[in-house]
Each structure stands twice: as C-alpha cells, then as structure tokens.
Length: 451
Image (cartoon, rainbow, N blue to C red; front, side):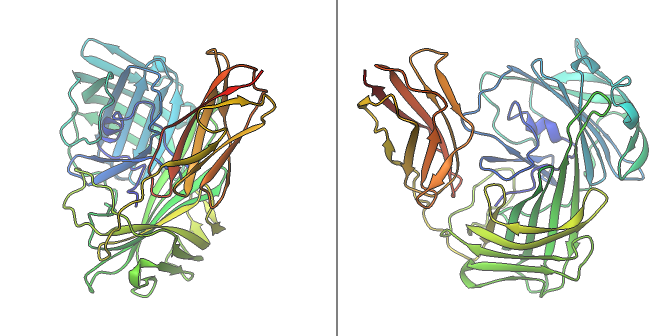
C-alpha cells in the first residue's frame, strides 16, 4: 500500500532531497519511497529505481510558506547540479510545477534568492530571499540520504509572490520567516500504521492525467468510510508556458455501504455511482491476486499495527468532476493501472524471494549464434516491470532496452535486440526486474558469441 505521493506541504522538497533527481510520478510503477514531513501530517511518495544513477553531487532546496485566504501558499525550489530549476507552488490542496531557468535561483554565501523575473509568464512573479543555509537535514524529515551527495537547505525566507493560477485565481502572499503550521492536506493512513482496511489504486486516465485513489475504513464501527484521491495532470512546457504539472488532493466521507471488504481481504468494492461529488459515476471492484504479505515499515509513520496487504486487479469506472479534469473513465488493470488491498486484521505470509530461474542464452554460455535476435530471463515470481541493457566488449557497444515482453504468467521477460551480436565477443546482460511484491533484483547474465 502506498501513501500519497505528491502532497506539497511545509517541508516538501526538504525530504525529497533524499532521492536526487526526483520527479513527480504520473503513472503507476514500482519503487515507491515514503517521505513524511514535520510532525507527520503531510507525506510524499516518490519513485526511485534501485539502480538509478544520480547525475549531480549537490542537491539544493529552499522552501517558503505562509497562510492565505485560499489556504497555505508554499513555494519550493530545488536544483540538482546544473539541471533546470524545479519550482512547485502549492495553494491549499492544489499544487503547480514549473520549469524555469536555473539563473532564476542564485546563491551567495549563506543566502539564496529566487527571482522568476518574467519566466513564469502569465502566471506571475516570485521574489524571495533565504538568509540561512545548512547542510544538516531538517528535524522531522525522513528518507535515507544518498551517500556521496551534499545536501544544502536554505531557510528563513522573506519576499513576495504575486500569482494567477488555474482553478485558484489571483494570489498575493508575503513570506516572513519559517512557517511551522500545518499544510491543510488530509492525512491519509498508511498500510501497517492503520487499524482498519484500505483499497488503493494507481489509475492511468489518459496520457496526461492520472489519479491515486485510496478508500479506507477504520476498524471501529462508528468510523465512516472515506475516499482520498490525488489527481495529477501533466503538461509539456514551452517558451510561452512553463507549467509542467497540476495536482489536487480531494477527500470525501461516505455512507457505510459505499465501501465493502470481503473476509480474508479477497476483494473490495467501492460504489459512488450517485456521488458524492466530485466522484459521481465511480464504481470500482478489487480482486486480490497475491497472498497477503507484510507492509513496509517506515519509522516516520507513527505506531506500527502490522496486518497484511495483497496486490489486486481492478475493474470498473472512475468519475471525476473538478476544474483540473472532468470525465468518466473505464478502469482495468494494466502496466500503469495497479491496485492493492490492506487490512490490519489479516496475517501476513512470508514474501517469496525474487530469484533468477533461467535465461536464454544461459549464464556462462559459449558459442551463442550472432544471429540471436532476443534475450530472455525467467524469474521465480510474477513481475510488474523489468528494464535492462546489453553490454558488449567496449563502452560504446551497448544496447538499452526501452520495452520488454512478458509471458509465462509475467515470470518471463524478453528483450528484442536492436542490433546484431558481434562474433567472439563476451556480452553481459543486465536486467532489473520488479515483482508483484515490489521486490527488486539486479541480475547479470554473461555469455560469449561464436565465430
């Protein structure tokens, strides 16, 4: 079960610096990292691959927040090496991501200044100076820093933001020091730290829209079921429009019959056909596809209660009526639409280890024909995804596999070669699979071609 991945709160990017090169995720996928800020009232979920190679050695972040009539206004700027500046502006339960030139963020001694000049175009301007610098992670931030990285945090912001944002309107905010209040986001429970049951799903709605839905009910009979959704829209930035993303968190309380779970956590059903708004026309069904395994422990999430969670298939319809997105979408399990079930009342079974069972060519094989057009590997568990590359004799002789084919109950992954193999050459096939239990494996298979 995955906690909300993109909540922008008081210390959003401060925690995100635990994963250099982070980016918002707009489709389901393995490798989620839970990040919780401050007193644990806000959280963020970010994607990271265990084999990811950071491209910078210095990660910088600065955050400013202040209350307003429209909710908490937060400005977070982050920079990794010489990459473009990442800017996130949140207002209430909505957030906006922008790409602006790195020159808009300057540092000198212990100070840093963000001056967007005219680079936000019609969205407005931001001018903030932070006067305190630290390389010590802020108290309450979570996640494991990457070894070898230098993390720089700027605090004590002073400045202004004059903005005009979609679905929000005009905002004028003044920042005068560090803000220590709450973010205003709904604190959604996490698997293993919640007494009750949850049904969650990553929903791919279109090429530019996705949603993460979590329906949950506490174990006490007096507790009503609730649904929380984070809705993401992505955009292609241009010279005239620097907006790259728009996010909104939505939350409703339901009647007791709208959400149900079967015994043993075999299935769940959510019926919001008649509402409430903004989820009218939503009707979803979950069916468990794996045995119950133990949730992931996270020292940031509070009191551990245990329980078990199961991967699931999902079908039905998802209705949404908001300023960001309106429509009725058919939902079906796919590579980018995935689902989970969790209950604190069921006992977790041991997670079967992810192992390499066989490969073609075999590890250590010789005389492999140069006419070989594909390579494959079979693993002990069904996979969610797999990436990889084939390394030849020289650093330039490399084939990176962008796509793969799954078969044998998703236990076998096959990659098509993009170019012919060279004779009398030793090749190393590197595969990075992720299974349905969110386990990773680094696999190396070596073989030699014939003459």
